[in-house]
Image (cartoon, rainbow, N blue to C red; front, top):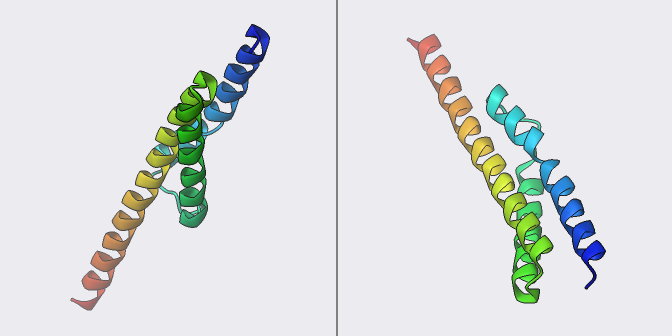
Amino acid sequence: MTTLVIWIGYAAGTLTTLAFLPQVLHTWKTKSADDLHIGTLVIFAAGVALWLIYGIVRRDAPILLANAVTLALQVAIIFLKMKYALAGRRKAVKATDAKGN
């Protein structure tokens, strides 16, 4: 593989990976992931995990690195979605209980 092709791979991986950073930061800042569908997040994470395995098997550093970081960001988004959804449910239960008392 030529050096140019390798650098194109790193550039592509960097850009597609960085695309998720604003979503992670936004979700963390707003403490809400209501507008993100869990099914889409999980399916995408599974696809990224398979790309990561593919990169490992092929020993292709641009694919491996990009997908390792993307998977970490995707897992963070899924974690935050579940955390904030649970917090929202607890808050709703407390509000319902407060009205009943």
